[in-house]
Image 1 (cartoon, rainbow, N blue to C red):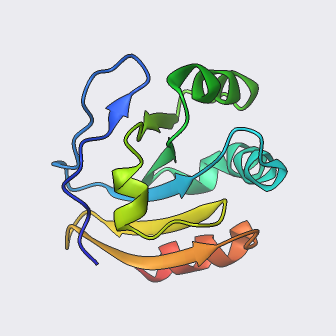
Image 2: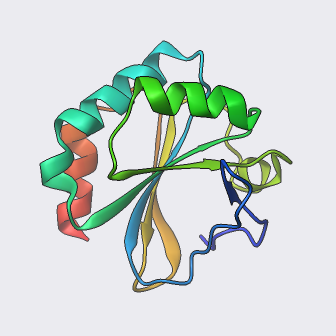
Image 3: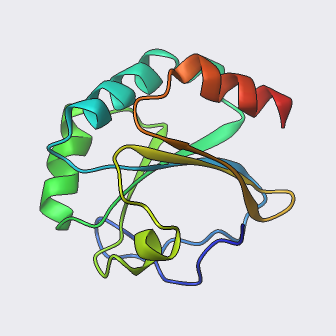
Length: 130
């Protein structure tokens, strides 16, 4: 699955680029979703097992809502992006939260999708298989 060509931005409005070859965990969230908050906490608690992957939280909400979520679930190893147009999410058919994609930096494609409250261990297993 190709990454949509729609522009995502950091919370300060600076454009984000998928140009590097880093593997990524793309986590689509809503700031008021309890499962999203739990997933963020699980990831922060397991951050040392995720050194080889960039962790990117994406929301189509207003940057202020995403900023508040990022302050409640803070790690300097997490990236928070805004999909204000909601087009990126729509192209990937994100309908439930959290929805998580594994993006391969090598192939520049999305290689796996998880919907809902999937255990982090299952996601880590898929990452280690990659």
